[in-house]
Image (cartoon, rainbow, N blue to C red; front, side):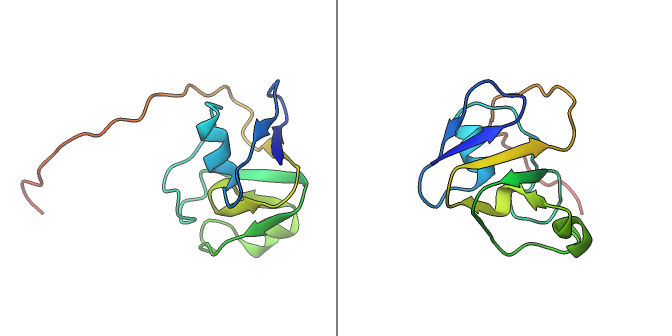
Length: 108
């Protein structure tokens, strides 16, 4: 299985059970995301074609009206067949490496 992100040169391989977001990030493809839990809506994209399974998510992040227009959350959509998606925000993204930052809460 593979994901084709419109505007990206190469298709991305998908492992069984992976979400669109997991597959794209593993391949080093810049894609907007934040919570990775279906609560923020940052990873919205348009499902152009493909068989997918949408996992539970917040209606705050993706309204039924948006879903009716083919919008999905990349972090909560598992790929079950070759899939084509289109980023909603076409701005160029810069991918920064992930890092762990230690901190301490001083006051609430």
